[in-house]
Image (cartoon, rainbow, N blue to C red):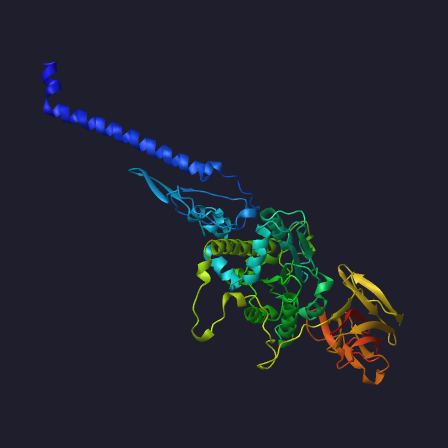
Length: 539
């Protein structure tokens, strides 16, 4: 009976099927182990990756729902070498079937040899998961080819130290926040972690209550001349007036022409305390397009949401402990929540350019193109300074010359504003704002200054409705008859900020003296005479 069962055709078929099944299972297990070994050799297994350090998240920020990705292996390279030529790992198959129902997917960034955040909005792109792709896209008010920025990122990735300077107003100076809550603290901490170098330099050159009129001449009093990257935050300090668009353009041209041909980025914040929501930053954006300056906007991301949910203005601007209760209402200066968002929008932008530069280096042929009649600029033309300013008439054969400037400033240690003769004037400071100040009619101060080729002399001074500011007259050398009258008081509520006024034009280049005297006449309805000088400049 037993022999007949063994020899039965049905039993034989079942026996053969069982043998085949066992062989397939063994084969699949061997294949699975082989693939895992390959991924391990390539360093692509999740268990092999170091834990990334994340910034603490604010509890009020809602976390987005977990994306429905299939399991992805992750790769995080040492960022010092991330921009080296990427070589795809040949042994890593993008999608490999292991069993009938089991799949391993290798992220595209991993295959390209890039960090995980280069897989846009994938599992390793923390900032995209935190803010959403739609918000990151909206934050990029102007992107452009980023020629200069990518050059800086490449140098950093190649192991060179980078010097970064920041120009800004009271927000960047830290009004209403504490270290390490400044957006500059967060950004530079990320930079040093991403591109560690003991000789990296970061200078926060922010000066409260100033505009780009001041920085267009005095920027180098506050950042280094050999800077590689400059971030400008002046969107709410400049009013929406052509004069500030022009001073912003002068600032940009001066920075782009510095010895290291630095990259310049415009970081635009938000304020809700002024007469209009639109401010000078909206004019800056047009200038940025002309000069190919990347622009990252906090306002673009949060404004609509704040308008539709008015209570959020407290979350963005309301001062948080340890500041005392009676100082908390402030719609002009973002709090640490706004600082963190601004910093991380900049970081997300930098990561985007890191990935783009790495892919460009791996495949430079993407820059190749054909321009019929040479009517379209070539890649090598990117990053150059336009030969003419925006605010002048087009001419065919003329190029704007670099401007030599002199700045004497109460806010600078390099070239402080000090009178060579005076009576009734003195140095005075309130918190982080310093001035040369006079309070009585007849007070007079004389300053020495070297005048540049344009022959223009200006003073920068405080304007305010609330401080009882008076009038002065200023003149060059012995030309008191040609003195200019300058008013400190103006009828603008809640706007206490520096402004520039011309003292003289057409002054011969060389050394000169400028004298300023407080007048009996005053524009202040309360009869105030106080006057606060900030700087004396020439070009």
